[in-house]
Image 1: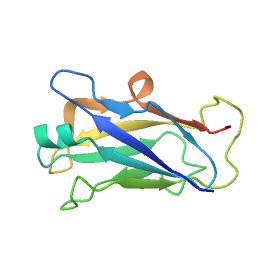
Image 2: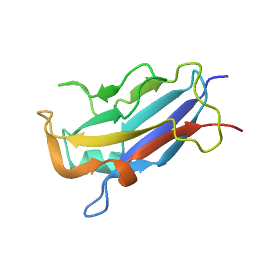
Image 3: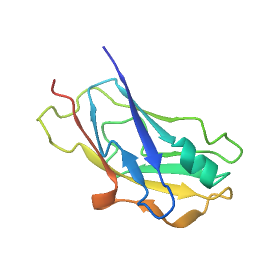
Image 4: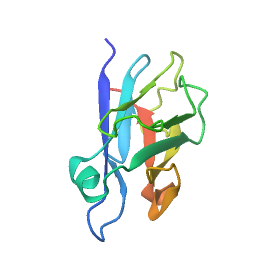
Length: 125
């Protein structure tokens, strides 16, 4: 049965910006729900979120982004397509997280990618 898989992006003061959890486990037809954490929204009013997958072949989108005027407390939802790899701990794709200002411009220092970004891996349980 498909499951919603939450991922929250946090930034507080001088701590690193990034996803929790860093590795999200998924199965075919699951949805990944990306959202900006409430403390981050309070600290940076009007901020927006952008998620860019490194490899989108098993997903319904390659880029997710809050549109201008879209409330930043809304989740960005990604659907996993059937046929994803099922090897335990294999990274299906990594993704880049960016916090944008109200105009859609990346905020310096609030980008996570590579070792600070997130990964999507198979749920083999």
